[in-house]
View 1 (cartoon, helix red, strand yellow):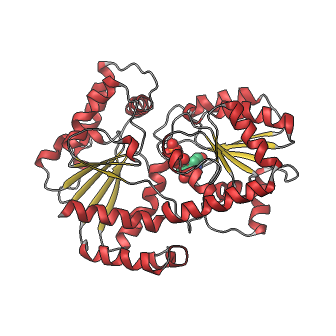
View 2 (cartoon, rainbow, N blue to C red; view 1 turned 180 degrees about the vertical axis):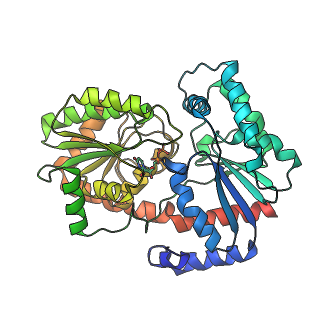
View 3 (cartoon, rainbow, N blue to C red; view 1 turned 90 degrees about the vertical axis):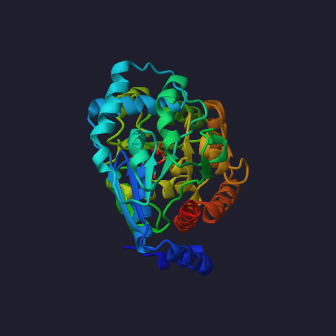
Length: 399
Ligand code: UDP
């Protein structure tokens, strides 16, 4: 397992020393992270690495997943969409389901935790028991709450208020809940299989296994099949690009256990692609980190056509690999893609197609965007920096 010291080569010695210094003051501190899935999606991705790093730093950390049934995850997916401004219809039965499953999970909370961290809205109902618990409770909102549906917010926010503080990815997401707020964008692990350097033989083997030829430039989007990632729009943008420059499209993603809509969206994408031999739609199992790494690395352009995006780790991952990225200027993508410097922003299908064509025709632009992208991620969005920010936050909350 990779240790904190292993990050010295990418993060520098000083940062590592700062981490150990902060960690000394938090030694033995009991931290519990609670979210809704161990696999799929950005939160699981972050916790998978953050939890062992915090443990190595000397904290007593556990990670638990809320137990829910299909109905519960349908409800929380509706809430998720409601956060992103999608018009939704909530019913009393849905709210009852949420309350019932929350109650059934009360015993999940570690009664001795110094910090209970609730990730996103799925476990937020656990905050009902906050008044009788000795620890500090933090609600970490990983999604963009700016256009949250009023009814859903009125239902959920009383639990958020019971927490001692809230964490948002970026300042634009701040909500007035009458308690402390922190801003902490997530990060990627540069040494994980998803992001580590790979050899040319690894690349060749994976691309052969995936059956994708190397004779044309690839436009790639990696994402769960979710309408908010607009995979159908990506196919439409690709068709415009291909009229100008020969290329292929790869849309790759798997499901998440807390997202019941994926299968339907996948069908919609397949329909749009209509057996086009230049469009590769790959359903990835959860063990596909190396495949994702390689697809991002071989891409001539990585696109992220999200309608909404809490942060957009797939963008960070591609930028780390020095890839030119074209992405919608939404949510957390806006702090990653600085138009013309660390990537290109494209708000519509037409703009995305034009930006991709521009990059495909201009290798020096591709090179410049890619290099700046990597530097930007290295300074702001890699795991050791994230760990340090966490330790600072916990220290501040403790005092
Ligand atoms: N991811 C994955 N397999 C997939 C699709 C996505 O491992 O099939 C990963 C992806 O590489 C990224 C994370 O899941 O690390 C997705 O995070 P992001 O913030 O981009 O979007 P979210 O899914 O949280 O909306």
